[in-house]
Image (cartoon, rainbow, N blue to C red; front, top):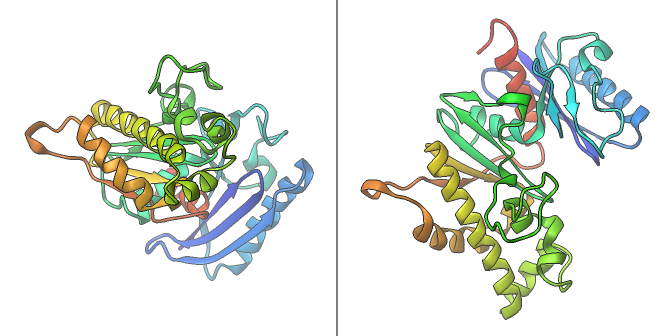
Amino acid sequence: MNAIGIDLGGTWIKGVLMDIETGEIVKQLYHPTNGEKDWKLAVAETVADLKALSSGPVKATGLSAPGLPNETNQYIAFMPGRLSGLEGFHWGHFLNDSVHIVNDAHAALLAENRFGVARKQRNVVMLTLGTGVGGGVLIDGRLYQGNFQKAGSLGHIAVDSERDRDITGMPGSLEDAIGNATVEKRSLGRFTSTYQLLEAYKQGDYFAQWVWLSSVRKLAVGVSSLINCFSPDLVVLGGGITQAEDDLLLPLAEFMNLYEWRPGGQTTPIKIAQFGDMAGAIGAASFAIQSEPGFL
């Protein structure tokens, strides 16, 4: 039996046809997002194409997107400033099918929990480190969405209360501390991307090292705070910034030695996510599987 997952982003629509039992990706498709009319039709075409490619019935369909879903996960209820026409758009009515909607960072967590590095873990915290910082929380094996479905906005915890306020009004947020969108501001105009910053860091540029290590230190403060709040079995880091690999993980480990509370010497493992740009689609399929009546 198969499930379909769609990831609706600002640049690409990504779709996967997945085997429910094994997690095998039977087929994956990409479409450019383009304008409002185009992306709605492109989602419909992607779903239709994936159904046509399925050798058996499609038992569940999920869609991940930025923003906050409504309480029944039928549409995105709140996403100002991006993807005009997304808020309140009922995908089930449009596609004439049952469609389960999930936040894109939540979807990434579900992909890792069902098929990736967090498989079979019951309590997991995930941070997605990209243009901004998103996240998700798994409690006792279930995605925790919370009141107004805004749980997991982990990039908006404060790590420096004396800094500027972020888009939610939070001063000195984790998102502003390490998200790609604020590199230029953090580096006083020297660098415009995390990639540029890291290239200079590797070349021994002392200013770049100061900027990067300051950001990683604040990430460690944030991760340690989340461990104190949720006591997870595992912390997963995803998103484009994790492509830094050891340039991220090695200094992060040193700062975690300073800040993580380790009663009895117990540490919380931190792993890089297994799935890359298809995480949202895979997670959307995973969410649909667990949301559809009769499936777990």
